[in-house]
Image (cartoon, rainbow, N blue to C red):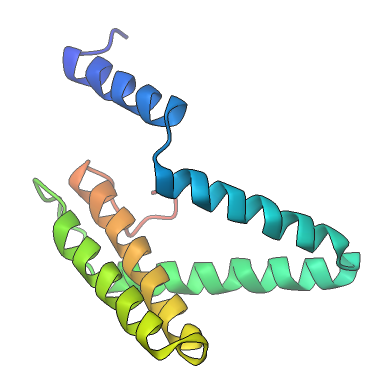
Length: 132
């Protein structure tokens, strides 16, 4: 099945992004590597508990994010709005420091997951299905 010109351009753009990550992606990668090394120092049982808790938290956050959306296809996603909400959430969390992290982190994660689901919906995915 041949690809359309639009699909080829999308693939070229994706390749460019993967081969030349932006500053935020490079910083995130460096932090992620350090965190991974830290988890490698934990006893295996603790690492498993943290991994299971993280997976369960992300699953619940995704369920909540998708629950707030309808499943009707849309022509475009609400990307700018989601970016503004995530930035505002981060700014408010930053203003209140470390104690706010317990609230800000789940909120910003839900906003980002909702944005991802919104983009998937705009691309024709049925977001209420497990496969999507």
